[in-house]
Image (tube, rainbow, N blue to C red; front, side):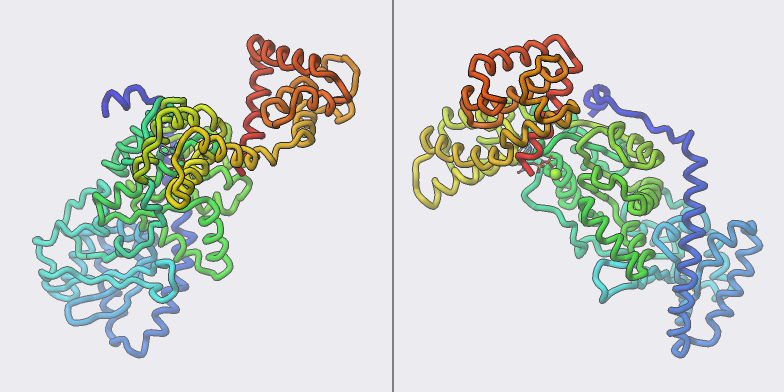
Length: 531
Ligand code: ADP
Ligand code: MG
C-alpha cells in the first residue's frame, strides 16, 4: 500500500486547524440534543415510574454526589446531568444516556470515576447497565437495553468493546458498562451483493480509486483515507466500487455495522424523522454505523437542513474513528450549493477520481461479465462492443444483458451480426433523447445566442462558433446525414457541414477554452442520454 499511497494525490488532514472548530461544534451539538434527550428521558421515566423501585433516584443521586467531587462543574453538567437512572435490580443500576457517542465519551474519559461511584453506593459488586435510545429503522424496537457482561465487573471482561467496533479507541480501564449496540447482522446494509471487488475490473481509469477502496476495506476508519471521496461521471463504477468496499467489510468483519445510502434515501429519512419528531433516533441510528457510504452526495446541493444534519453525523463518526465514504459527480472543489465547512471536511481524507474506461478496460469488463454468466463471446464481438459503446458502462450493461437474453433464451449464437443488431436497437434508444432541436437549443443557451442567430446566415464569429459547434454535435449524436444536418441549419449544403466539423476539430486543438466548452456540452448530452 505504501507505493500506492505515495502516488495518490491526497489532501492531508488539517486536523490541527480544525480541532477547535470541531470541539466547539461537538459541544454545541451536544447541548442541543442533550436537552432534547432529557425531555425524552423524563418521559420514559415517568411512564415507567410505577414499576420502578423507590430508591433508584437516590442511588443515582448518591453516585452523582461522588462523581461531582472528581469532575469539574462544566463537565459534570455536560456529561452527567443528562444521564437518567432507569432501574436498579440487585447490584445492577441501569442508566440511560442519549447516544452511542455519549457512551463512548464516558468510556474514554470517565470510567474510573463511574466505577468508583457505583461501587461506593452499591457495594463492591455494584455494576452498571447501560441503555440507549436508538432507532433501528423499524418502529417495533425503538430502544436498546444493554446487558452487563458476565463476570460481575471483574477485570476479565476488559476485552468487551462497546459495539465491537475496534475503532481505535483504547480503553485503558475496564468499563463498568457493556453496551449491546445494533446487531450488525440484522442491520440491513442496503448493499447489492453483486457489487464486489472480484468483478470490479481494474484499469488505468480507476486504479487509484480502487486501491484506496481496497485499503479502506482492510482497515476501515484507521487509514488516512477518511473520508474517502470518489468522484467521476455517469457509469464509471462509483457505486459498484463503494459497495464493493461495504461488501468486503461485511464479509471480513461481520461485527461492523455497514450502511449504504444514496443521497435520496438520506434526505427522505431525515425529512421523515423531522416530521415525526424522531430526530434524535435518526442521529443515534447513524452514529452507530461503522462504515457509512453516502452515494451521489452532489444532490445534497442546496439542501441546507440535510447538509446540517449530515455535517453533525459526519463530525461525530469521524471523531470516533468510523469510516465515511462518499461519491460525487465532480471533485469537492467544484460542488456548488454546499456549505463551505462541509466541503472542507470532504477534503480531509482522500479524494480520488474514476475516469471513463479506456478500450482495454472495457474489453476486460465485457469478457468478465460474459464469463461470469457462462457465455463465450468471440473476441471480435467483444472488441466491436468495446469500440462502439462509447457512452458509458451502464449502456454497456444494457447491451450485454440484451446479448445474454438473445443467447440464452432465444438460443442464438453471439456473433458480429447479432451484436450489431442489438447495438442498433440500443443505440437508437440511447440517442432518441438527443434530437437536432435539443442540440441546437442547448448549444445556443450555452453560448448565449438566439436560436435564429444560430440557424441564420449572419457570419459574425459569435454566431458562427455556436452554429458550427451545434453541427458538430448533430453529427456525433444523431443518425442524420450531412445533407440533412445542413437542412436543419437554414438549408445549408453538406460541404458547409463538413467545413464546420473540420473547424470545430481544429479549434479544439488550439483553443483550450473552446475545448472545455465542447467537453462541457458533451457531458450534458451524455448525461441526457444515460438519464
Ligand atoms: P456510477 O455509480 O459511477 O454511475 P456504476 O457503479 O453504477 O456507475 O456502474 C455502472 C455499471 O458498470 C454497473 O453495472 C457496474 O457494475 C459496471 N462497472 C463499472 N465499472 C466497472 C468495472 N471497473 N468493472 C466491472 N464493472 C463495472
Ligand atoms: Mg452511482
